[in-house]
Length: 403
Image 1 (cartoon, rainbow, N blue to C red):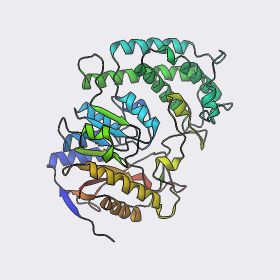
Image 2: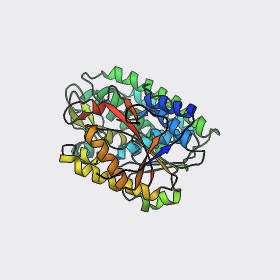
Image 3: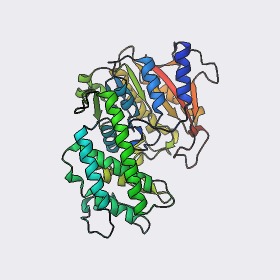
Image 4: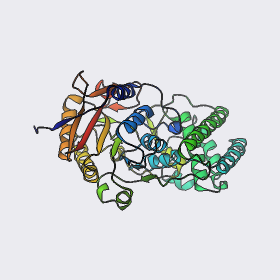
């Protein structure tokens, strides 16, 4: 076994206690634009906020190479840090753009009027133009059953009116509200709500999302005019090769990498909803007008059933190798990771980080267990090797620097 280098990261007692509290936080994800979509395996905004505030200053660049639901980007922007977000999932990039694009007052009025008229139009007895290309490509799979077709048609009625909105940001926000409501109605539910319940929930979520967006806008752009997004770079690509990406190189080297990569051996549905049990649907891509076309292993570094997870660790080494080459000498890499079988996967993961050019940094003053920050995560919707395991319900925070 390769010997790993370990250095110590020191924080004042008050800052360390803030970090410990943020790691242990079990509050529901909420506030700002964080609840626009329930992306799987999100870490809490409190954790992102404390890490960014503790280890960077305003103007420092933050990178999340596996951004998922864009928690890091939202918190970085609010705290005055430019941010780069990457993800291979087009759905994640759509969500990130909506979350980080404040609407102007004129935009809010436009989408409010559109929403009110669209809700009045939601009558399943109306004729609607079917999205035949999306249907042929399988994006409506498992949402045209006896229980689900009224919700599917209600979504079709609303999406058919998207073109009435004049700007891309208005259209994206409207799609995001429909996406969030569709997720509430269909994902991991054993019963499907009525159309009347869907309409009511749609209006409720719309208002909540508008309110959150206004707070976000006020914190990031106090002028109240058109939003400024030049402080955020979102790319639909893998982390492998990021050190050669022109847009990233022009943006600048990150001071902090804050991320939650795919978890070894843990099955997480980043790209599908589960309908009435275990039936999967790629409908989120249809609603958001993004493309899927890839299997689960594409989003998770490889098949979790592969012996020794070789593909996973090879992909992780290439990805973090590119991140290490992009990073500066003083860049801190902070990850939140879970494992299906931590006793062997954690040591292998740390060896992979070292092979990628990163050395582990321990947080001084942590005297419990193995000296790392662990947290228990209740009620997560994932499966580790066909069943929930105790290991998969625990996450660890890892700190690294360029070796």
